[in-house]
Image (cartoon, rainbow, N blue to C red; front, side, top):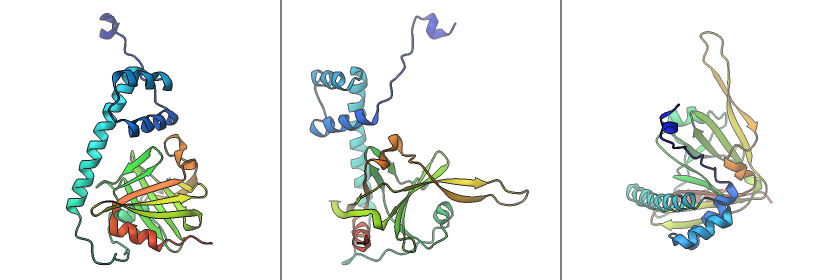
Length: 242
């Protein structure tokens, strides 16, 4: 008998919050970041959640908001003063980055800090968990995602971008929003088992939507955060057909 059982205690299973519940929680948070206990009980009852679970969600969401504010503040401090006119996006030469994305066509890396699609969010890091890049040969912008040692990517052809807009978020920081008229293309990285003494070959394979709750197949608005002058230039230079 385990020590927990011996002490008459039983660990309660935590129910996983659904994407629909998360979306409603975000709506409530936008209206009131610190609801009273009575209001939290009402929210929990309406969404079918445990009251304690709801309380913890609001605590974590407030902490996340503070952390995001600090990260953005640090990003602003590290940014160089923007030039008088936005510079053209140039191809970088970071060997690690190009080895990770292993594209055949020439690409241009787009500096960014995070990507949001619905409630699904990825943050850039020194381990290259998020890389954004454009490819003129394929007329597309791509989000490369690294998670758990695996690589994924979302390719957004310019032709499916119905609307693109740039917004100044804070000094030096901006957001580029892309509204699509249909879902993008999803890929997963695959490996070919090599012969002895031969380096493993990698290739991109089209797949189903692997985002949390398959949100990227339903939420057709992608928001990329990063240096304002680079993202502004990106939006101005993407030209959907038609």
